[in-house]
Length: 66
Image 1 (spheres, rainbow, N blue to C red):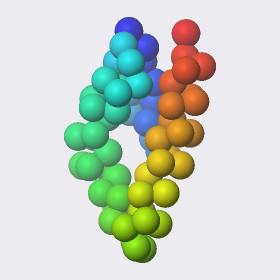
Image 2 (cartoon, rainbow, N blue to C red):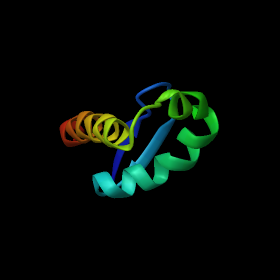
Image 3 (cartoon, rainbow, N blue to C red):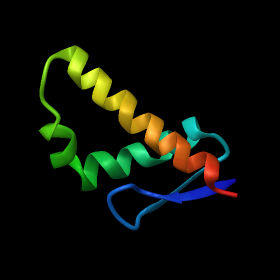
């Protein structure tokens, strides 16, 4: 089980896989960082590209956790 902090604060979520970690983080992110999620405006393509960039960065961080 890997434990990793939110990219915006000290909240920690756990998961065996990146997908499990993301699922564990979603409620926290929606509650504590809703303004960040709402600030990402643009076309659906731009929003998808931004989400993919965010996920790639966090996946890279997750893979470094021992």
